[in-house]
Image (cartoon, rainbow, N blue to C red; front, top):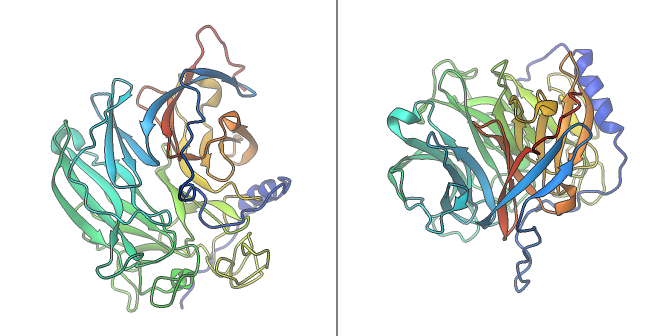
Length: 424
């Protein structure tokens, strides 16, 4: 396959070294972090009912829990101040005045809620105030199969009450898989929509495999670029190129669980779960190859450098024509959710990156220097001992976090009255 070559800069290497300096205290042993407890195990609500105050190295903050969710995955903020939240089992919920409405919103198609699939990401159309269009990703079951599904981009019109109407599939990918998979979405400034589809481990024959991430004739392990109606833009990097799916924007993606537009530059940033080690943040450029499953800073779940169901195919960390990450995690935290904080409510955190950790049970704060390079990482919310699925900045300048638990919650992070930050 044709690989695009790129001249490397020193900056990504600095970021990688920072990641490698983190002490290895534990390893990611399985590809299914965040799955429900085993059958018969009772769900436990381990989160306090009321607000708790925590202190980062630079900012004291209050965490206010909003309970009543089951394995939430993603959230968006409505113009009226309410929020929509997806639950992986296939429910769309609304939070009104800080309370989860017990009645789900109707209109969501049937999903396969198995091996981390189900109902996933959520986004509002850039002109939502005019058209009321809500976009979401879900895993459509394959007819005649019990455990195979593919990622779908769909949309519906929200009635501001309890229903999505005019629900339709806009794009059905060919990534039919029996293994874990994620499908994140983000609207670009030009109104185009990015869709990242991952297949991180090898499954049974006849279904999508990690090796497909390097093949240009399918949607597996790719970032796709689509029009807001699901059609394919004519200016995509591989449009018209023989053998390439025209929807492909970038390839070599393992399993992206964070996909956002940088608030200042407009660049597409994503992070993805590596195997055992090697979680990474990438800045996605059109037509570029991000290496999976050929290269990785991680290794197979069984500890081997390559192979098994989960490892890369080579022992190399770098290869010509393949992009290097902006940042990596060793050991893995299984990142999920990604936000650039630009608000004024928590001023000591302004300009920081926030990433949820599923295996790490952490909200991680990443500090950048004046050159935009990572210089410090701080683990937050480790005391609550819950997996963090998503993190978003609200229009009110606060941070909102979802916990990936059967007794899950929406956490609002707000300043503590009378406290001054150090501004570091």
